[in-house]
Image (cartoon, rainbow, N blue to C red; front, top):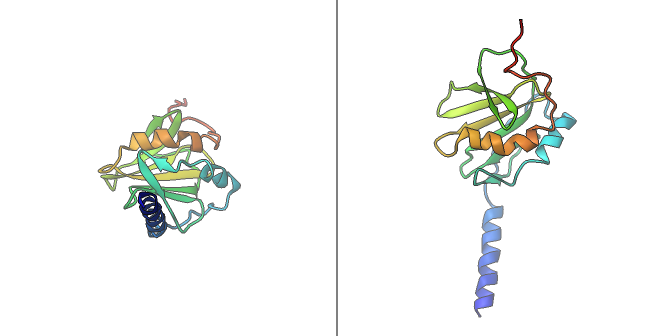
Length: 150
């Protein structure tokens, strides 16, 4: 009898998790770039302890309930910016703090660019960026934002 209850509970959990609402996102202009597909297939099922969510747009991803991390691949590459540059696990990111405590990170000098939006009240941006590094590293960097040019 206990076994039957466990099967019923397991089936109920699977049904409930399958009914989680889809996170509505807008794809980036270059979302159909094959390089984005390489990024997306390498994304973790769990990010900083947050479960991956279903999304409705190509080359996007989200984690957390409600979504605390959103990723979009397919943005125009950025090689010049006045935004602050941060590096996490050897990946350079431009940091947009204008919507704090939601921080927007844009991969620097990688084509296509990837944007990651992090709700810092739920998870630390550096943790997210470090855990995404293996996925983003498939996009070759053309330069580093820490390079100084004369």
